[in-house]
Length: 318
Image (cartoon, rainbow, N blue to C red; front, top):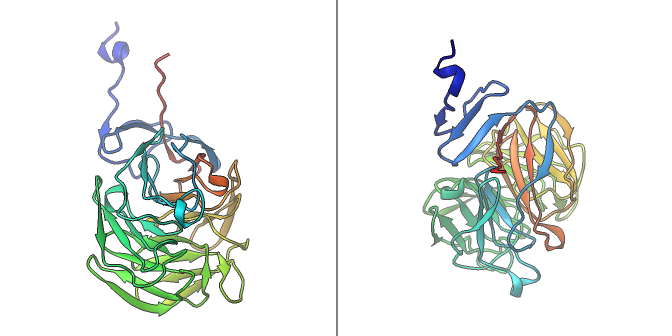
């Protein structure tokens, strides 16, 4: 005889965050991101198409993750064309967010959407910086120098910034002021950053003076350490896997090569469908992330998913 379970099935559990060790095929509703999610049976990492930005641009900065992504700044040309616009991503579409208090491009950004800090950037000589509360931006103390190509890890409460074109020094933000720290061992620009304010790795890039563009430098809160270099050289893609542990993360090393660091060695993963640099990119783990916009002022968004990662389930009414 049929019972309620046979007729109606089981309820999908509602959770404030994704489970730490989900079973393949498991389904749940994430009440924080307002999305139906499931554990993928994907056996290899790959990129897939996401929703387009409302307006294409390059030299953006990114924070957050998928499906809670954040893109800000950038523009369609030189300083006069830089914007203060921001957009949030829900895994399907981009929505306009609050405008920053200034325009800039090639700036550092890190944090989740409501804990984002945006610092420096081209077209912003004194290094004006903003923090976000989920709705509006507030100006904070300026860096005091041209923060072009600066990258960062952490959030608006505690962040670490380094690898700006015009300065080899690292800088810590403690929620109220900036403090200058030791110079990087290899001064590059166009790098990627991952981690937290006291465990941050800076990857690849183009040498300001001399040296290879495949370095892997880690800041431990006190000093710099050199780790195994990446297997490819050149400029890295924006902020990659920001907030992820520096023992395990993905990085868009060069267009279109994606790499994974497992704490001891590098592995080559799936390539971007559209090779580009200068896009807004971020992710909170080695298993997920996004890149939006970039070279040619494209509006394309691509989402990264690692093997067996949790994915957003798309529902059709048809």
